[in-house]
Image 1 (cartoon, one colour):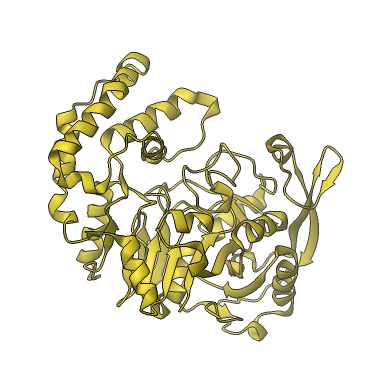
Image 2: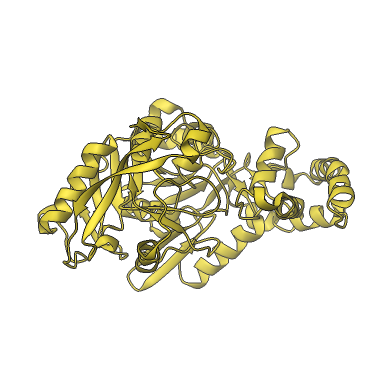
Length: 428
């Protein structure tokens, strides 16, 4: 049985939780392998809407074992809050497993994230201020706190004190903030022992054994290709690898075990935070897409920047991730638009680029070259087959497929769980 990866093809918020939910009943494990609570998935089940920030979307599907693996950084307060909120709504969360090697976001990570971003002024990255970047920085600097450390108070205290020896100097002398007490941090983290004890394990071994038993594993990326620390629009990126390669390092499952890569892409493009965005709209149409598409961040509540579909970015995502299938979401948002532009290439100082420019400065100055496609007025929310879509909607999908480097296997036509058109089996 396969290991399947779902990642985002743009700058996030494409609807990856929806794609995970679409496959939920056909998989046994859903694994979050990167990021933290700096991104969110909104999943609609019947009349119920669930906003998940740290937890894998698979936690909503009965029978699925959700896993937070080693590549994730965990804010334990957020973990507890989300588990409590789901339990109160009748969701069984008892099967959640957490990697002993996952790193922990502490109070000092959140504080440093916020004061550093504020200090940058006009040079701000657009961080969510949730401590994600500082936690990953500590991981790379080998001074991070891991989940397993919470079960050894001596080790935990040594690590926290060592980290704060330097960080308190920065907070007090550079940012004019109060020093953080190591005792406060240790006491806070120790308070989560009871919560964590039944769920912490060697998740890499668990996944290896599951694959050996013929189970299906689904990897769910946080953020998206264009926010990947190595392959995104650096420095306006996240602090982890949100692309296909990150699934192996972030989980302990070897690359050859992953044989399907599904990338989710909106029928238009959005972005939250700072950074280049060639097709961004600053007019009434941008406002229209944001309003009809309800383009507000699940985690931050920030209004998303909106623009037209960018085919070079989709091709880039297909190449970087080895995409086997695209899931196209929010096609219904385009209903009623007379003519729909699609970016097919860029103009950079008079030179046409059919692929993403390798130079950051060139991409920052790239102007989209558009091809126009006729729109449709029909309500497509009731369509369940490709043939039930209006002819112009079909043509739009086929054109995007030809431009984007892989087949479009499913199309979202509304926010509800069943509002989807499936063209090809995502697991075959």
